[in-house]
Amino acid sequence: MRGPIAILSLLLSLPVAGPCGDFVHRGFYLGFGYGGGGSVLETEYTATDLSVTVPTAGTGMAVDARIGTALRDDLILHGTVIQHIVPGPTTRSGSVSETPLNEMDFQLLGAGVTRYFMPANLFLSGSLGLATVSGYADTGESGRIGNNGFGFQIKAGKEWRLNTTWGLGVAFDFVWARIGADSHRETDSYGRVLDVEETDTYRHVGVQLTAALH
Figure 1 (cartoon, rainbow, N blue to C red):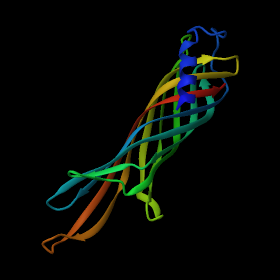
Figure 2 (cartoon, rainbow, N blue to C red; figure 1 turned 120 degrees about the vertical axis):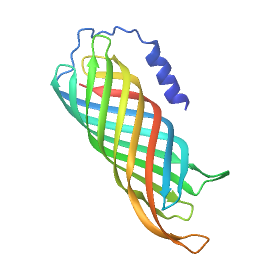
Figure 3 (cartoon, rainbow, N blue to C red; figure 1 turned 30 degrees about the vertical axis):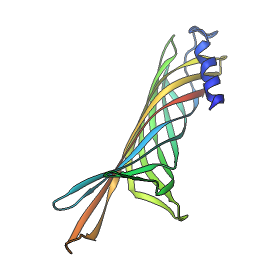
């Protein structure tokens, strides 16, 4: 963790007005984000006369990439890829906590727009697309949790221009996704056969170091 903290300290020490104060974001765009934060997957089990929510939470790495082009000055349309890796998340059921998964992964593939506010070089970005969550168990088994779903990312931050091509910065990001319902049948302790519907909701809040090529 010392590396990202040192880079963040360096970025925060840079002056607000860089050498490219009149810079305008035009043409080709390539952006990256690397950081971490907290993630939680809430699994809701719903049957005829009951509803139970089981959270699985942890902290881990978050990366994303965006590639696109400017629609006009300082407004960029781009494709977006997001990957989160959460090692050893904790699952809580009632008062019992356990770690049945070695790792929980989140992926989102979609599109979005980024708006820069000049000359401060602040930016606000939003992306939405297809989302999936995968789990890797202690037994070595792996698989997708639920079906494909829908998700979005909101990201806000500031960049400092290094030159007329590259900028480095820091950003806060929020991700939300709803994974499609999965239905199955279970027998309860009274011998009743219940139709159970499982719905997963994923949330992530984090901080990233960013880099952008314009």
